[in-house]
Each structure stands twice: as structure tokens, then as C-alpha cells.
Length: 398
Image 1 (cartoon, helix red, strand yellow):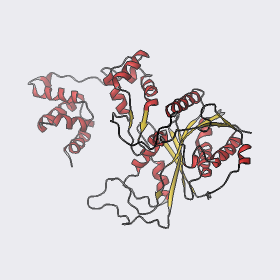
Image 2 (spheres, helix red, strand yellow):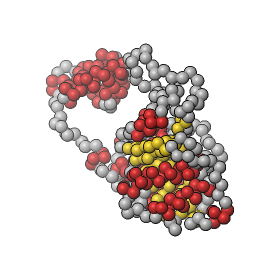
Image 3 (cartoon, rainbow, N blue to C red):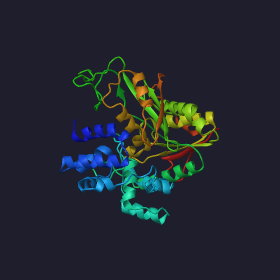
Image 4 (cartoon, helix red, strand yellow):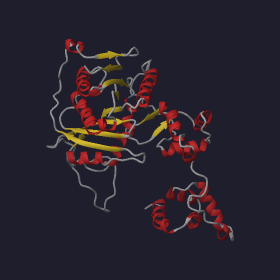
């Protein structure tokens, strides 16, 4: 057990029975006893700032200072910036979001704007805030400052940035009108059975979970999770398929989301915006995707608009870092022994920002290779937008 882990265990045990002054004394004593690096270790273990721990060390090191220190009343002190300015966090998210990118296997997001420039923009918008406060808010929201890395998925399309701006405008318009906006995608296929899953979890010492030596596909086959993430509500539906990842399966998942969650949250909805990758079962060139969506629009009476992310940017889809990365963390180190295990682990996924997930098994057959003719495409109630109609289009209910 590391020093920080030992301190964390001590603090969690003592904190409930100590008042604010006693907790400060304890931090100061522990940090001073550790010597070099003690302040950082105590700060990491308790969640207190280095400034607070440093002041605590100074307090316990000064004769008589501890006796003179008072105990603040509950709720005393300056309120957090988000309390005194309730609109601050939402304003910061609006500034950062257009520049947000994410790794689908990481819960962290990062922004290309500096905290100083963000603080300046917020101040101009009427939210007086310091750069240090912006940094704290970004950290709590899951952002981190990172250097560039060579991970480009392909060549940049000349209209890539313009498509992101167009997509953002569509999202803002739909949300402002109270209409649902969803981000959809398939998670990577998972082997079902006693197979090793990357990551570690707490187990009794010397008793790790036993799994197969080789990852050959067994009788349980594979699981195909397809997700629908509601951008405005921060909740999601995931269908775990057992057959093929097809456009029919993708739209069947949208149907289940609408029947189980969407129509109750948006009873007056007339439109639906879908943000999707440019490839896969919901790709911009997949005819069956458009055909199935037309049927879905007719069934629900919704006008369905689809905006695809430009080529080479699938990692920037919101569902990747707002749902799939957290699912991966929730089942890390756990063998996915059955389809039911996968469904339960997905449904148990939560985040500090309040994500809730519903999940279900889909055992239906979705045959691959279904062809849609040119004549069938002509009959679809499909209207392509003026800007990149191959990426942006609307299907109206007949």
C-alpha cells in the first residue's frame, strides 16, 4: 500500500469525527511527519489544496497558533463560484465544447483553449472569474490540458471544421427548441465468456479472477453494444446485440430508446437530431440506414435530421467520451462471462455528472448484405441539406 493510500484510509476513518480545525491539524501533523513530498501526498489523499495543507503545516509548526485558530461555522466562508454565479459552469461548457476532443477509451476530455483566455471570454460575457477558478472547474468536469499527439485517423477533409460548426448549430437549435438530440454509435465487439478483460479490480490478495489462456471465440459468441446517448438529458439506452452490426440493428436500438426513454422525456417532440459517425452501420453512405430511419420517422411522426461527423473524426463523437469510456472503466478487469453480465454492467454505469444508462439484450436476427435499389431510394422522404447533403439530411414522416 502506498503512502497516499495509507493516508486516504486514515483520513476516511477520522474525518467524520473531526471538526474543521481538527482535520486541518491532522493534515499538518501528517505532512510535517512525512517531510519532503508530505504536503503533496496529504493533498492527494484528502482532496485539499496544497495551499490549505501548507497553511496547516505552518499552523502546527508555530507555537500557540493551533490554540488560537478558530472553527468556522457550517456553511461559512466564501461560497463556490458556481453557487454565487449559477450560470458560470454552463457558460464555460458552451465555450469549451466546440473545441472539445476525446479519446473513446479515456474519461478525460481536453480543451485547446487556455484557462486565461477562457477566463477573459467569461468575464466579457458577464461571468467575472479568475483563470485558477476556470482550471478547477475544468478539472472537476473531466478536462485536462494535454499536448498534441500523432493519432490522426486519416486525411483532413477541407470542410471538416465547417461541418463541426454546422453540426454544433443544429444541436443548439434543436436543444433550444426542446427537441431531442442524440449521439449514436457501436462500441467495439466484445468476446463473451471467461476471457481476460483489460484493467484491474480489487480482489482478495492472491486470488485473481481466473480466465481462459486463449481468446478463441466460444459458444457464447460475441456481444455488440449499440448506444443512443441523449445529449440534453445525459442519459442513454444501450442494446446488446448477438447477431450482426447492421443499420437495421442500429435503428432498432433507436426504436427501443424512443419507446423506453425518449417519448416520455419529450412527449411534445416533433423533431429528432441524430449525430453519427460517417462510417459503420450508421454511415453516411449506408442506404439501409436511411431506409430504416424513414420507417422510424413514419412510425413516430418525428422529423429526423442526421448530421454525420466528417471523415477521420469518429473519436470526437460525444457518445465516445460521455458513455463508452465510462462503460469500459466500469467493467475493466471483469470477465464478460455472459450477455446478461454485459447488460448489467452497462446499466450500472454512472458518472459524477449524473449519467444514467438503461440496457437490454437484443437476440433478434439482423442479416447482413441487404441491398436497397436506386428506385427504393427515390421513394424515401429524404431532403438533403444545402451544405454537404451527403453528411446532413432530413427524413420526414409520410
